[in-house]
Image 1 (cartoon, rainbow, N blue to C red):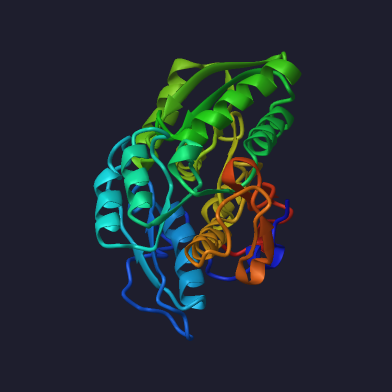
Image 2: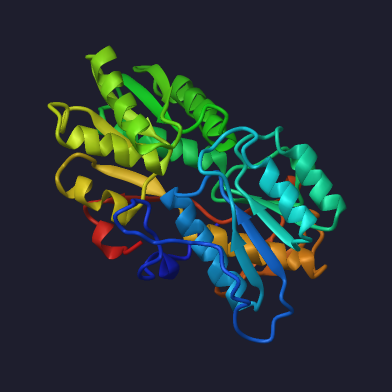
Length: 339
C-alpha cells in the first residue's frame, strides 16, 4: 500500500466544496498523443458532487495521457437504480471502458453484466458492486484501514469516552455501510467507554447533512463527537458546528480534503480528519480500464499493470486493486497540501 505524496501536493487537483469549482465534465476531446482512441466513460454516483468531480478529473487526465476519449455521465441524484439507464446507454454505444462508483451492490448487476457481454470492460471505484458484476474494483484504501483511522481519531479527540454519532451518505452506499460495520466492531472491541448512539444519513446532500447534524445535537445533548465518513457530510457538519454553541465542544472527524476543511481546522471546529487522494483514484481507475481493454490484464489475481506516474499495481483477491492508505490532516500539515 502506498500514497503518492507528490501527487497529494499537486496544485489544483481536488475541490470537494462547490466554492472551488473544479468541474469534470464530459468531453469529446480524444486527448493527445498516438493513442488508439479507447473510449472511457465515468459514471459517478451522482453529478454535481465535488468529490466525483475531482476523481473523474483524475480519470480524464489519465485518458488524455494515453490518448483515449473521455466522457462523464450520471444521474443528478444518487439512488439504488439511478445509474442503470446510463450503463445501458454506454453498452449500446459500444464504450470500451465503463468506470462506475456504485450506488448499490446488487441493483446494477444485470445491466453491468449485459454491458460486459457486449464487450465493455467494467471497473468499479470508490464503491463496489458484487465482484461477479465487474472486472476490477479500484479500492481507495482497505475498508479496515478507513474504519480504524476514523475510530482512532474520534477516540483521541474525546478522550476515549462518551457518546458519538455517525453522519453517513446514502443508506444503500456499499462503501459507507462496510466502513460503518467495521467501525462498530472496532468500537466494541477496543473502545468500551465510547457509545455509538445514532447513525443518520445525509444522502450526500449538503443541506440534508447540515440539517441532520442539527438534529443529532438536538436529540443527543450529551453528544461528544461525530464521525462523518463522507466528504459532503463532514463539510456540512463542520459548517453547522462552526457557528453553533457546540463548536469546540463536539468533536468532528471523518473523511474530507484539505481545501474543503482548511478553514474549519484553522478556526478550531475540526482537529483532524483523513482521506486518500480522489484524483489518484480516478487516474488509477482509467489506467486499469485501459489495461483491461488492451488485453494486458484480465482481472485475475496476480495480474500487473502500469498506471502512468503512479507506478505499477497488482490485482489482488476478488479483482481488487488497492490505491493506498488513508492520510491524516491537521493544523500541523494541512497547509502543505493544495487539493
